[in-house]
Length: 422
Image (cartoon, rainbow, N blue to C red; front, side, top):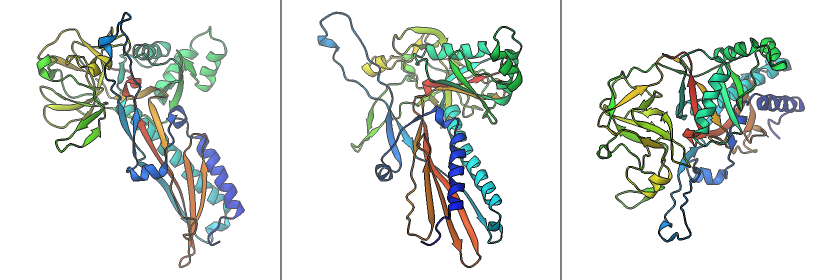
């Protein structure tokens, strides 16, 4: 067969796949959803993934008037990342197999990094639980705040993860290394800069971390929380266009009206005076202000935010079930208070079910004059290596490809912690 891989290249590819899987650290901390690839092609690589239901309960044996509709919330997930690392080698360069292995190793490292970065971008971009710390990273007290905000959201205590920038991770390790009563854990912190599990979170050190610029929106922005202000949200499974077509609704986002959006930036984190977080099951206020993120800025007075403000002000069944905020004091000019007051790294935390990886598959024909090899990692991501020779130049072209998607299907199960804020 033309352009077939020889045994040496096969072994090299196996080594690439092995190393590729080793470096997929963050993607192994996300849940995985396998899709039917033919169905995905027919649906433009988009599939709607359900969010958890929240049930209601009532007192007494007579439930005659309590049978109501259930609203299923879904989010769109897209297989939208196609990453490729191509290179070529001349007929003379191919004499040195070591060079080929080095190029394959570099391709593997770049693609693994691309997947980890995509996951990190989705987690930091859409995570809505925001913790502002006025001090540098110090250790247990920081993670305890994350533990508290996730507990108040009713998030399961298992499979929680925290990924920190190198400087913030090392700050925690430094604090741990200064202790004298924790034995081996202290020694590992001092000798290896290792933190490990803190307050139920497995911690990981990043050699990159997305920065969040200090908010420039100022302290004069306000929003109406009055019933007539229209800034509360009603969850819905579908919406019907004027022409009669029904389509799914992405309930992660809401458009709200502010006094002004001047200097507000994507990713800004803020609270609204009088809007408090509630436990999703009990609906009782946690006593903590609800945190929101800016997703987009459509106009001079409107923002698209996440999560939506579900206060049950409209009294519909869907609002009562999915209520996530309680209003202590309604006002026409409730103050917007930004949390990202100093530019800093976004240290992201999440529950495994919040972030989802969708492996894709590239259907390359085996008889098209290109040699193709495939391998699949334990988390379902397929690595494709292909090779062809140009008879005109004697150059051999190699490429390694991956196709995948990442979705933050539950922004209220993920978030960021910012250090050294004012």
